[in-house]
Length: 180
Image (tube, rainbow, N blue to C red; front, side):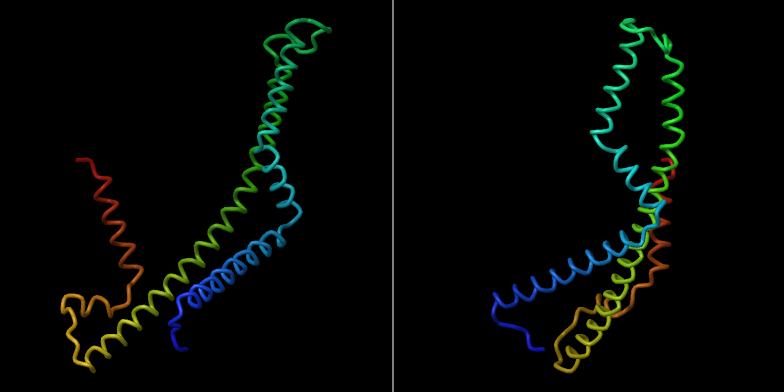
């Protein structure tokens, strides 16, 4: 494929590629949303509802009404101070809400892990393609007798080994964590 000399055409090609990427990501997201089980749907809906300002405001109003009704004795108090029944109700709410919200978070974490794995695979493929491109460029430079920076000669043509990078990161992190 011959590179375009028309910048507006190149811009349109980039726009098309970006749109395709956005559509692919949206498709993956729709598939992930569509593959949810009933329990995952319920957990996600519950987490969304409980994690909203509407819920917080509504719950705050109910708590204020509960306390007010039991303190000022407008009606016969059903839960006098120290509001043991209210504490029991809130404990039940927390006992059920926490695991349900964690179910939703676990599902989202699994999706994030899948996305990270996909991104890593794509990055590794891109790095391998870049290495091959640099090797070809080196051969072209040799063929055309174009000088090449000797310092970078071997480094750029070598594939990156992820295990070596991980060990280097661990070494640097270990050095940072040691007390001075």
